[in-house]
Amino acid sequence: MTLKPLFAIILVVPALALADDFNQTFTVAAENFVSTGKTPYLILQPGHQMTYEGTDGGQPAKLIITVLDETKQVDGVETRIVEERESVGQKLIEVSRNYFAIDKTTNDVYYFGEAVDMYKDGHVANHEGSWEAGKDGAKYGLFMPAAPAVGQKFYQEQAPNVAMDRVEIVGIDQATEVPAGKFEKCCKTEETTPLEPDTKEHKVYAPGVGLLIDGPLKLVKHGAAEAKKQADASQQKSKKNGAAADEKPLSRQALVFVGADPLAEHIWMESINDPNTSAHDRQDLIEDLNEEGFADPKNPSADELPLIENRLALIENLAPDAMDEVNAAAFAEAYKDLVNMYHRAAAE
Image 1 (cartoon, one colour):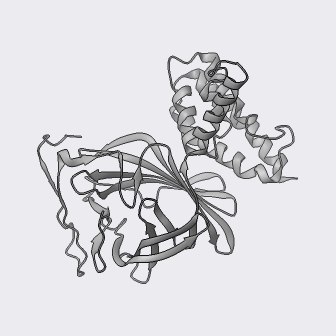
Image 2: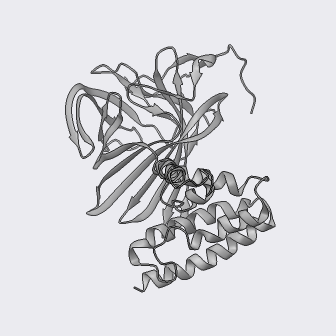
């Protein structure tokens, strides 16, 4: 990829002549984009996590959004990666890695694309909906202005024939109550797309918090990711007991939450791919995926099937790019054991 000069101006121009009045032309100086920060309607601080619950087709649905401690260069801009992990009926159906950047002069948030993994029966089925600014005619869009106004219309996604979501601000002073609490002066949006003219969806954002309602899903909790809270609590407990704070490495603490908490997975993956981690420790961190986090690994319950499926899917994603033969062999062993656990839990 050829990076643009430091003081270049990034100009987004229409890829298609669309017959609508939604703005799709945005001009931001390249040096004004930042990948970390807190805006009125979106927090891009690593470790921040939001959990949503609701129903989809009569089944319980859950969405976990986590700001990862990872960035990606997209079309010459450093973007923050925000992971969305969605499950329906306790089965993982989608994991997406979204790319955002903030215009530090306005606090407006721009959207540069996403990498999508669609799951079926615990396996990646396709990558439908993936796009990236700067590739195949795709352009970045405005995700959310810092000071939205009723009647404002703009494109969030500009990937021809793939993703063309557009937004209209329909309210900016709405009182909203969700399981996470009551919020005032909320912004309500209406989302449509020319790719599916009959599709319409509403979302609600609270200032200082972010997304409250996403279609049928509502915010139930937000803040620091669970893995970090658990790690901090564990360290405090060790200190009180007079033990060293690093008695149990953070990677081992994170292992317990792999498959349930994206930040934990990030911590764990950094360790197993770190050449400074001994081969023995890397092997244990991978093979113990069939032990840590389960009440009784030899007798897994049906309630633990989603965790087993998530870990199987994770191995399928990581194993092809294993760092070395030690990791590859450990992935194979863990996968075999988890498959056996899956059959035992499913037969319960």
